[in-house]
Image: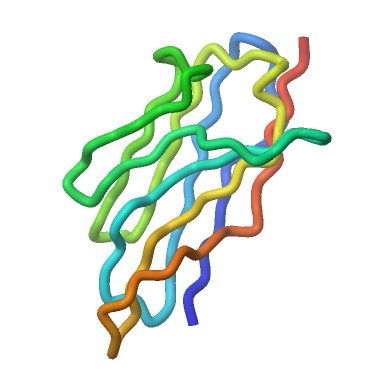
Length: 121
């Protein structure tokens, strides 16, 4: 079994910063892409940022240089540094990893349970 556990969410004032972490554990052979998504009430889940195993990154247009995704392959951990937060960044943030488990070469997507980020004006 594979588990993803996010942490680092909370309440912050507009203009502030938060750092999210997501640790993957379990019967992991390899992790390919690692991503952060978010979902606000009434909205569809959207991609915030993704990072490949070699380190190539991709960001949602709304990020505009405010967020930075990074990963530690030895710790099976992906981070999201969020700066200059805005009230419209309020959402539940989820991590998603593409993981192959021992005994198979097939990659499957696994999701964390989500962490709430609330930005007050």
